[in-house]
Amino acid sequence: MVSNRLKSLRVEERKKKVVVIGEDDEPIALLLRDAISDEPGYQAVVVADGALVLETVRQVHADLLILDIMMPGLNGLEVYDRVREDTTVRDMPVMFVSANVPQFDREFKARKITAVLTKPFDLNDLLKRVRSLCPA
Image (cartoon, rainbow, N blue to C red; front, side, top):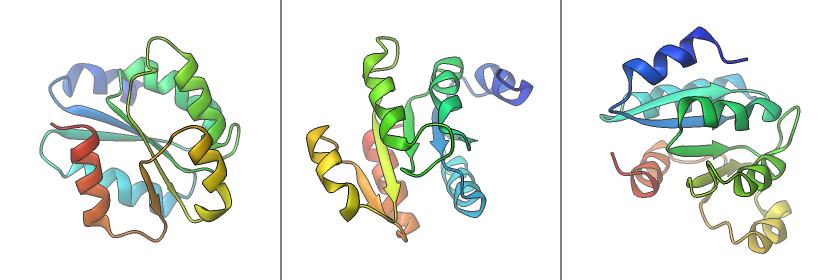
């Protein structure tokens, strides 16, 4: 079920690039959302449950997906695999942010994932990556 906020996002922010953030750590999620939404041409929405990320990406016609690995429901790698299997969103760029990058390096390489930032990250680096992956 998509909230009224997400429905209004589709209508009000059509000209902006929509970034969906799959992150269950609330302070990090809010930091990412606010920093990205403060950038001209971008609107970010947070989804804390991995199982709801794919539905949200479809509903809001996301332009970029930012994922943490450890989330309830589905982990970030499972969400990534489902996104890549879905013909409606498979070409959308995906970036990972995680404190456990070395632990998942093999999985990233197997999936040819190169857009990865290690927590803690520099917010300017993250915004530069967002602008690179999804130009406004």
